[in-house]
Length: 85
Image (cartoon, rainbow, N blue to C red):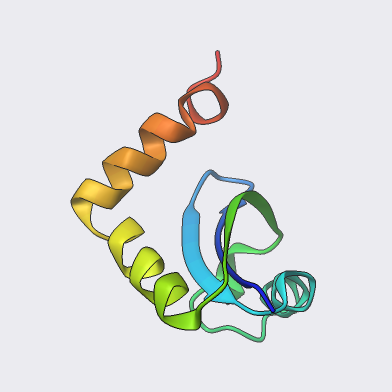
């Protein structure tokens, strides 16, 4: 079973980083307002995800992407998408 680290974006460009073992269900939960952190920014869509075989790896990756260094890495990785003209 895979564990996914994902990045969501809403219509005003706000990003949310999380992890789950069921990406489809988790996106639905975000868009139904079942998560306090993302309730006000609906609708959300997935702009990036990574798959890990171990839940600890997914949690560690999520925590890293939430740091300033991880945020810079993510923005470099998604440069063409995030900074399109």
